[in-house]
Each structure stands twice: as structure tokens, then as C-alpha cells.
Image 1 (cartoon, rainbow, N blue to C red):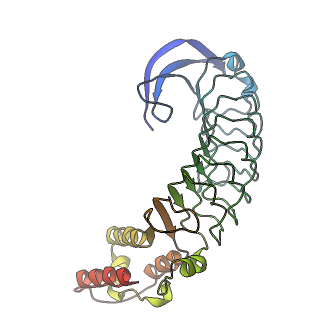
Image 2 (cartoon, helix red, strand yellow; image 1 turned 90 degrees about the vertical axis):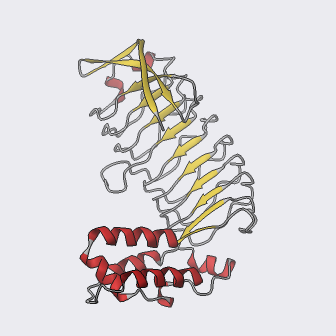
Image 3 (spheres, rainbow, N blue to C red; image 1 turned 180 degrees about the horizontal axis):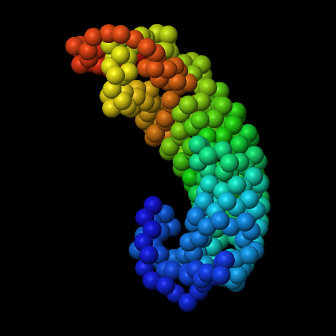
Length: 314
């Protein structure tokens, strides 16, 4: 996303005795060759939105950025009837509420940082049913266990639920315009519930527990860390050099990511163009790299080539 400041306009709010102006800014994910009335309050410690003087009167505001503000309550946005984009990334939000009046909203970001457990910890998807214009919804890295509360969002095109605790793909039947679905790093064991998503062209279920399902579905008979042993000198090499270890890790990640083109049949969804499947065994591969080994380095290149060849044959 590219955001470029263009000019100030005659709109502002006051917070903590300081004036913050609304600017005309470009936002590529809302549309090219356009500018949008934007208020940027990122990285301000804001306990309560109601203390921002003048916020509720910004009826023409189109983009509001409230990332990294330590917010726990997001009520107080009722007057922002023209808002198109709202970002609330990495706050302290535990419950979605106070957004029902934002009926023109197209983009909503409520994700957190996976390394900062004190930030957004949303457990349940709710309070979004009236956001009928929503196209992009990011709820990644929260504590969500079930896909629900999305039935009315028929214009939704991008849904990111990665990094949650979801066990089952469900509640998506009405999202017939969905083009991208991010479900990596959940607890999913079976790929199902996608039959109605005929426009879906990107599905990411990396780092889930779908190995047994995929093995049966695609007749992958040799996949699994117990079927392949790392060249020992590669392990030792990675131990000695952080730079080469990182290179090896990236190589492993690339190899373990499977992309099935649209001609492959994935259950009943045969229009998916990009299907990312990082099997749970990847973690076992990475653990091997951290095991202590003592081997010579004179055959590193040979072992790397052998490693690639063996993986390709799986």
C-alpha cells in the first residue's frame, strides 16, 4: 500500500491539547489516481476515542488510521458516515463493537502483531453484519476460534483470518465474491466449506494440520519428514554460519510450499489459481537445523544439490 501526503484541508481534531489536521492523501487499496480525506493518529496513546474533540463531526472523513494507539474500546465512531477505510492494527481490542454506523466502510484492519501478545486479542467475529460495502477484512493474529458473523458481507473480496485458533472452514457460503482467503497458522485439519466460493483464486492454508487430508486428496505418498534425512554437513554448516542458515531456511520454506495451479482439482473448487500448503512437518525440518552435528564443509554444494533433488522427487 502506498500512502502519499498531498495537502492539508480545513478539517481537524484536537487530542491532548494538540491539533491534528485531516489531509488529502492517496491510498492505493482504495483506488488509483484519487486522494482521500485522511486522519492519521497512529502511535498516539489514546485511551478512549471520545476524548478526541471534533472526531464525531468529521462526516466527510474517508480514511482513519488508529494503529498502535493502545485502544481497548472502539466506540465513538458513529458520526463518520463517509468512512471508507479504518485501520486499528495492534491495539488492545478484545471485542468488535461500535462499527455498525460505518455503512460505507470498504476496508477494515483489526489484526495484531503475532509477537506482541498484549495487543488485539479478539475472540469472536461479531458486530460486522451491517458493513455491507466491506471488501477487505483483516482479523489475522487474534484469538478467533470460529468463522461466523460474516454471512451478510456479500461484497467481501479479501478475508485474512491467519494466525488464529480456527479448527474448521465454515460460515463462508454467502461470500460468493471472495477472491482471496488467508487461513494459514490455524488448527484446520480438513479443507471443506469452499464449494460456493466460485471466484476464489487464492487460498492459503499454510502451517495447519491438513497433512493427512492432503496426502489422501493428492495421493502424496512420500511427504513427511521421516521420509527424508537432511545431509548432515548441511546441518553443521547452518550451525556455523547464521547467514547460510537463513538461506537454508528460506530454501526449505520455498520447497515446502506447494502451489497447485487452477487446472488441479481441489475438492469442488477448481478455479483456485494459487493454493499454498505448508505442511505441519515443516516445523520438524526446521528443528533438525538446530541439532548439534559435527561434519566437514567440503561437500556443502554437493549436499545442497542433493537436498533439492531429493525434495523434488517426493
